Image 1 (cartoon, rainbow, N blue to C red):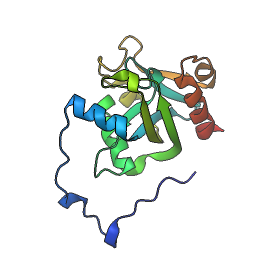
Image 2: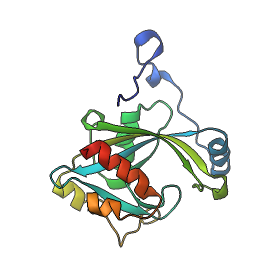
Image 3: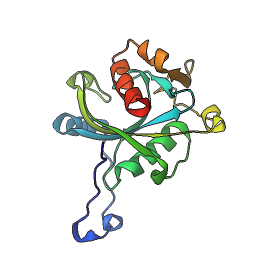
Length: 182
């Protein structure tokens, strides 16, 4: 699958001249999320020899349950830039954007979302990338306890483990596993 082509009017990168995007309080952000699809860049940490994914357990919407890392793409970021920023924010791992391998594009519809009101749901266009972390990087991951279950931490899930995930995220993880490993 081909990842999106990055096109810029006039062929030059003028994003550095854009004014900084405004900060939105939770109510304003919630209204934007209700009006428009959210664009996200997710990242799967892969163990190629064991054909598995390093996953954490999210404890808030959307994507509750075992899941990869990631989040929204901000104005001016390419999908790969967003993936690098999201991975750094959620795990502390620094990966240059060009080191990610594009895996999958998904249109997701979630029943619930963060922020309030959660019952409005969330629509996301997600580009998922993968990378191979070192053992030290995995051992040093620091998860936000407001977003992830610290008791679960980060665990390696092979095909068998992914097929045993009964949470709604399990279906997506199985598709990602087949895209990554066949």
